[in-house]
Amino acid sequence: LRQCSGKQEWPELVGERGSKAAKIIENENEDVRAIVLPEGSAVPRDLRCDRVWVFVDERGVVVDTPVVM
Image (cartoon, rainbow, N blue to C red; front, side, top):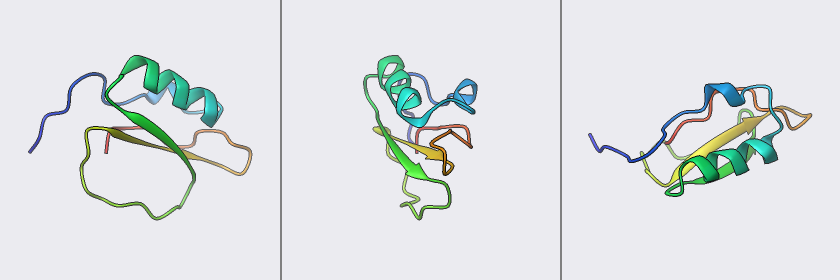
């Protein structure tokens, strides 16, 4: 199992706008890129230390805790 550096999850961003959440994530961990997607989107399940999926509802609000995946 690989160990990723920096902050790994952002439960405090649930309910926040996706675009704002992505900026916060990238500011708090410079090693990751936050990618905003509609909830239910199919995504690769491989672990990558440089990626955070940010799932949003139809209003653009974060619905699940963003985590490094």
